[in-house]
Amino acid sequence: MELLPKDLLSQELLAIIGMIAIVGTIIFAVLLFIGLILAYIIFRNKKIVRFLSSTFGLVIIKILLFILDLLYLPSRKIISLLGGNDKMIDMVNVEMRNTLLKNRFSEVPYEDRIVVLPQCLRDLNCPVRFSSVGGAQCAGCGKCKIFEISERAKELGYKGVYIALGSGFVRRTIKEVRPKAIVGVACPSELNWGILEFSNKGLPCQGVLLLRDGCVETDVDLEELFCVMEMYQNGSERDREN
Ligand code: SF4
Image 1 (cartoon, rainbow, N blue to C red):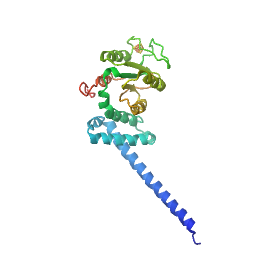
Image 2: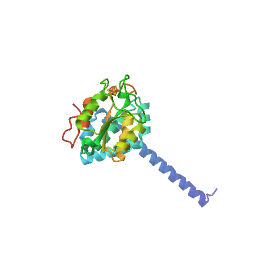
Image 3: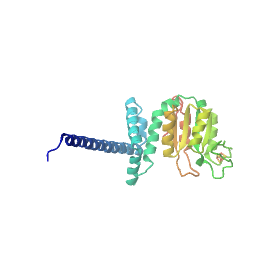
Image 4: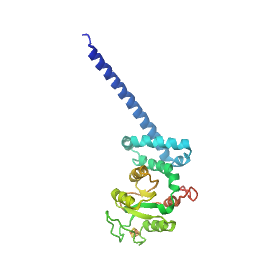
């Protein structure tokens, strides 16, 4: 049976759509593969990111961050199916975002910065009642590291230390306090998306991952956190690796 011009047109259209779908799938698979390989290399040796401080290196970081943000869910799913650490993408992204924002963060005076800590860092017997609306100040009982962090922030002249009781509380606090830079401590996924959200609003952030997460009595490396808090104009930064 002879095909009508209309049928030929629809067949051609279907062929074009099929071709676009195949090319799209190949691009998606290649990007995913490259993204996962590079993320794994950085995950195994985080120092690599810190060496990529040249303009060319920063462009590579931006491209990789773009790929990993775009393919965040499938990347996590694949890592999880392969039995890997499903926090890997978040941890690598935090490292890359820190590197990209480090110089801008270092230019902000201490008095314009705040520290945001997760409430799970508190001791289970913390004497202070915290409310998700008003928050609270550490009473300084010394049972958890928040006391030492608050003291160091005071010595440096930080604008404040805030104990986060959910993302809504953090947004409200930032709106009220109006800092110009933020040091955040949290678990990998909260830190990854938190840095992205606030840096998109023009606030350079630096994130420090919890050593142990799990929602109660978590822990943070004070040496690493103090190094980040002390960063100023690239001159007073202690080596985060030590
Ligand atoms: S040091 Fe502060 S935050 Fe930690 S348990 Fe004591 S009062 Fe609570």
